[in-house]
Length: 240
Image 1 (cartoon, rainbow, N blue to C red):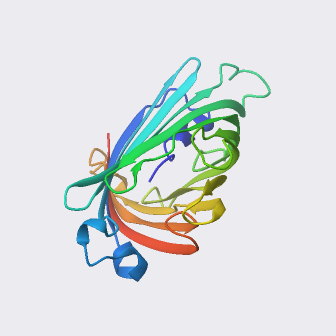
Image 2 (cartoon, one colour; image 1 turned 135 degrees about the vertical axis):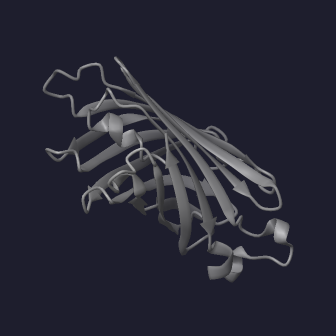
Image 3 (tube, rainbow, N blue to C red; image 1 turned 90 degrees about the vertical axis):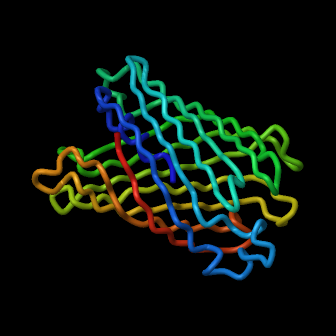
């Protein structure tokens, strides 16, 4: 539930601004016994809200999102803030941006997440009509409090496809990074979150009704727990 507005910067549409709010119902506790618990306060949260914001300027852009998980109240919050530096838009290398990012959060059960600081470069591209966008970012990932190694890496791919006369959007990201998790005995994590949305503002006469309904599937290996998980959601989104 993140990173999708970052594509606006990556394809160079620096006059755009966008914010959205999402609410997802997560089926993880129903799909996997390991994510459920007799103590419901310890089970995987059923609801997640996401707030995303993108704002460009002449030096590049700022993007952030905040996820909040709800399980008998707010169980945890996680946020990422990223700065893309690209003040050479009129050059032949305007497809390349410098990337700076911070990740962190807090959970009622696991307490504080490890802070992470990322520094890297982003390659991006788009189709002629901007209906298809993509990017890949390679970063050095500093996790100062990691028990094994503070020096790590992350590779991120982001895509967006609008089709069917703008009625449908297929957007998402995939992350692969190194992070030692002593409680799992793992060192490498894969996480992807493809989303499919139906956009009501594509309907004639509803251009200002910016509601979307859709789904997300969280595909992960060594992220939720050790091993592979595929967790779907149903969701609504309002774009401002």
